[in-house]
Length: 154
Ligand SMILES: Nc1ncnc2c1ncn2[C@@H]1O[C@H](COP(=O)(O)OP(=O)(O)OP(=O)(O)O)[C@@H](O)[C@H]1O
Ligand SMILES: [Mg+2]
Image 1: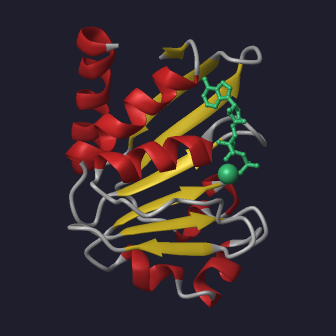
Image 2: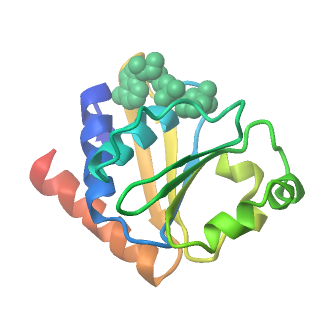
């Protein structure tokens, strides 16, 4: 899907935030500045979380309490699946919240089989391409809903 500007990124993120359920796991892959944190902030808004969502690059994980909690990971400095286990990543993944992992490609082996993978590429200053792939039954549902959202609402 093409995202023409940051507003479109936010719309898709906010929509995803309205349809996620406990245990959903979302992998964000893309270079520095591609929009992963921006997208996560919009998701949090869609989930009804009022708290300001900041970058998790230095904290590794930030937890936001909402009707459904949001576990926001940034694996940039973790680098390996082992490091993800060491910070207790698995316990969050198994808990009834929504997990979002930036730089998920670095820790892919530690993530569940049913995963919504969102991969970003930067086409210009403001334009992004986003590929969406669900790897299991629940994440394929989310994939379908995001693609319908693109067709009808974006
Ligand atoms: N269409 C767009 N979608 C998302 N961000 C955009 C878009 N156009 C411009 N931007 C800008 O790109 C930057 C994205 O930064 P963001 O922190 O979300 O990236 P990131 O992928 O989380 O980077 P990092 O890997 O460093 O964590 C912001 O400065 C934002 O304003
Ligand atoms: Mg980020």
